[in-house]
Image (tube, rainbow, N blue to C red):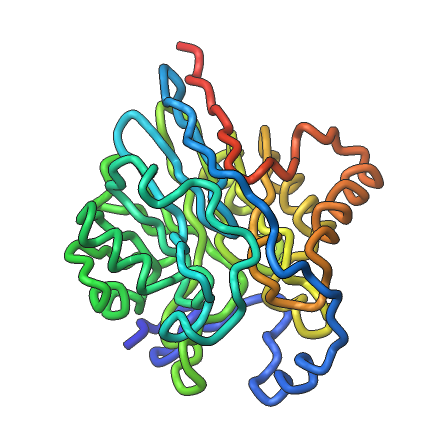
Length: 318
């Protein structure tokens, strides 16, 4: 049962500010929105993560919201998703258009998984089962997700509330707010919490936003935890806007989040892998470039990296 707080009534979680997610009854109308056609598949040559060397971290884009974060203390996967479909039993739901940029066999030992919420495109039980058998990793996740994670054979799970630091992770790690919702079925809506994470490695901060709409808490993340050296921000799955604005940022809002955070560098995620909503496969990246131009933000400060590309976060100067 959820504890009573500013984002829980004791039974279900909710977003304390910002637009309310649409009810389940609005989904049929949303599904009738004309969708831009996506290709059946996109050729995506496999890549291998760059070595860590003396960096504070090396962050490699695998696809959708899955990143490999290599640090001196631990190798981390965010929202690991290696299945062909984002849905129940790997049979229903959107089909993968682009294969994972880093093959499963090429993953280094995974010590820690950051799981932002329980939606199928972020919490994939078949992938978690494979990781449990191969690596026996620890999982840090928001409140209410532990039973689901343990059903995949994960032995060590830590649930956190917003702003709570991890006691299990081998490096400083804090769960941050997100504006979203949770559900695995029509009957469990908002029984589990959602969130993002700030990881600190060698005095460098990496922020993984998870899934979120735009609300002003990005400024609070900066004020409480400091500006990120690297922010991983979602830019896709945003149309139709009347439905999606309460759960997903569009690229322009993601640029505002980047500015609110005062991130040294931001990298786009949550696009180009599963067709979840109405926009085309290339529209989020084009809209991101347009938003950066209109706001006079230098392109290198916020970019959509190639799938499989590794971003080096250098050590802080002593």
